[in-house]
Image (cartoon, rainbow, N blue to C red; front, side):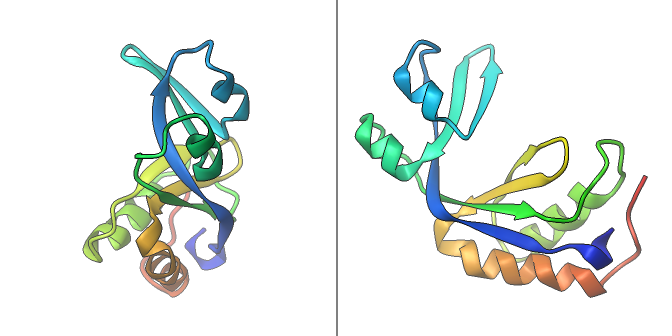
Length: 127
């Protein structure tokens, strides 16, 4: 799977916020996660600014374009270890077809280079 890994970079910056489930920003969310503490939304920085969430840290949204199985073993460990070795924090959202990584906006280019370098390294992962 690593041999076919590539990264798609969304052009916008994103923020995480906890909001009331009835908030109009929920309809604008690119991702939502319901937790006991509240509803987390991931929205573009532009939408966050327009809804009074301007002080949230900015993240770049990277999508691993390799198709991964929900039962694959090792892919998350491979990319998280590589990013951690470079001091890059990473928040992961797993979709049905792809893994989506939110990294600090200032580390966007660095993270893409680290992830693309995984294509030729280490043992193959899969499940």
